[in-house]
Amino acid sequence: MLVAHFQRLANYNTLANCRLYEACSQLPDTERKCIRPAFFKSIHGTLNHILVGDRIWLQRFGGGEIESTRLDAILYEDFDQLCTARLSEDQRIETFASGLTDELLTHTIEYRNNAGNIHSDPVDLLIAHFFNHQTHHRGQVHDMLTQTTIAPPVLDLHRLLRP
Image 1 (cartoon, rainbow, N blue to C red):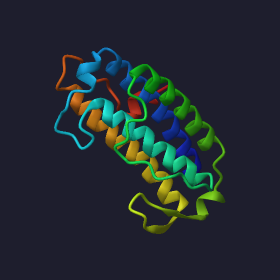
Image 2: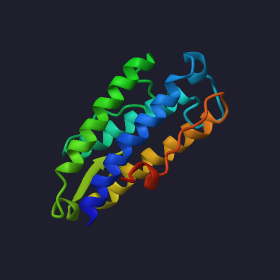
Image 3: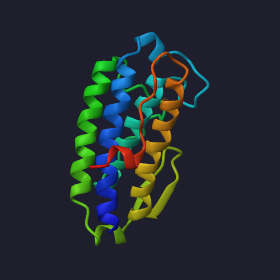
Image 4: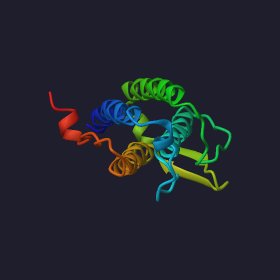
């Protein structure tokens, strides 16, 4: 059941990102990059952070290490390039989730975090964190959208996944 749940969250991630990016695309670049009271300083910075986190975790889930990227790195200054990268990453997430097995969820992953500390955590906990991290930061972007003239989209899980 947990595998199916994570696959559902991967689908939700794709749908929520499509809606969020559509709303953000209606803003001028200056509004997306406007400094706001947020941890990653702007809508654009927060969208980049989500992508940074996704890439780090997918690399770890695949058994690899990724060179430490600053968590506030701006991978893409250009919004259109960021959108393209997001679409590609969401496809990678869907592919990753479609390959999950109950057996894999019983494993642990050892990894070095951005502070340089070594951790060993259960895969099921880390995948739950992976999806929670995305939702958490999409919520921050949603809030920052309320500070603009663009209405934030509905991102409720049950509404997006409703048949």
